[in-house]
Amino acid sequence: MNATSVTTPPQEILLAEPRGFCAGVDRAIEIVERALEKFGAPIYVRHEIVHNTYVVNDLKAKGAIFIEELSDVPPDATLIFSAHGVSRAVQDEAIARGFQIFDATCPLVTKVHVEVAKLHKEGYEFIMIGHKGHPEVEGTMGQLDSGIHLVEDVADVAKVQPLQTERLAVVTQTTLSVDDAAEIAAAIKLRFPNARQPKQQDICYATQNRQDAVKVMSPQVDVLIVVGSPTSSNSNRLAELARKLGTESYMVDHADELQPVWFEGRQRVGLTAGASAPEILVRQVIDRIKALGAVSVRKMSGIEETIKFPLPKGLKLDASVAGPGSSSTE
Image (cartoon, rainbow, N blue to C red):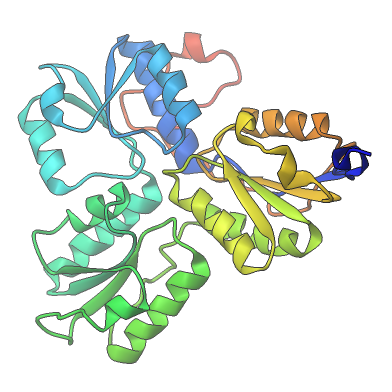
């Protein structure tokens, strides 16, 4: 008998709650779509608006052009900064070039930028917990010319050499592993007892909520699938977290990447999505797992996220377009 003929297919898909788009991602995508609607294509976006291949390709098809260098943007064009935020140098260059600018930086990232600027004026140096090369980290560190030190792990904390330790503050990338960031923060506190911790946790509510859901889900499933693009920090952290909890986990950009062997002998499949992954991709993954034999889908109970961030001025739709009963997000 062929071994595959006796393989037990998955029976149930357990859906994480919450999952997928957060308020910052919703806002960033809406900014690009409204700019296209109001000003017409092309609209230029510095860096991927959010780290998701499907979203970026969809916006490209609508007329968005994604660039890394402002020299690639023609004069008088409309330019949008991505949700990850940009450095002061990029902001200053964009203004100097005369672009019409809309800032899609997530307000929770902007909060960190504001705190850095405020404390810098008070003479503080900073230790930033984050991943080198990530655009959010580059944007936050780029708020200052100097005096901000990046640490990626506990070992890095011992290498930090601030000019002084009396005024030292800690900030973090918003999409980190909550547990890893806490471990690094503890190492910072041990070495620099007087270091000022963030007033509120810099790691965003959506990252925290999705990680908490994975912690609840992992013991209940045989394998966990995370929908998210390889460049998405918060999506990668979800897959890593599940593995740390002892649950086999895979991250996929789309349903075609699913491998049947992942589900052989697994009765219950967990499914979640990073904060930049649209629900349409989750539905396609569900359909694919059902095709492999799953017969039911059950949604976990979890936090309902109701946060909505306002759009920048200048992107409000006309009342005639918005329709009756609509309310402005400005």
